[in-house]
Image: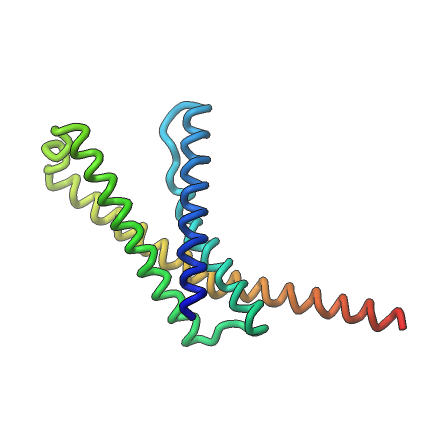
Length: 158
């Protein structure tokens, strides 16, 4: 199971970097702020890729226990990445402009940031669950149909 988590972490980091670059490029070309909401797709895509790897290795869907194990551990990976990236952004922002902390010290800003962060974490967890559950099962069913069609074609030629 550990290899699927490593696969998840690598793919999630890669997709997040690529989506960030695309969001920044689109913002630079068309002007205006970058839309960072697309990065929420990174955990779902990474979970579906790790789930596909699981299906390819075992030729079955993950059991309920395996799916919860992968979902929870993958969420911990996303949470750790979020803490590291957020910490780095906070340090860079703090050293760039000394007045940022004074502006952000207002209580309402912190409440909005905490509630927004919790919503993003809940959406990330849901995206990971969908990636390991629904999306992986659709890929597995499509693979079974494809193998059945190939077997029917081979059987018809004999």
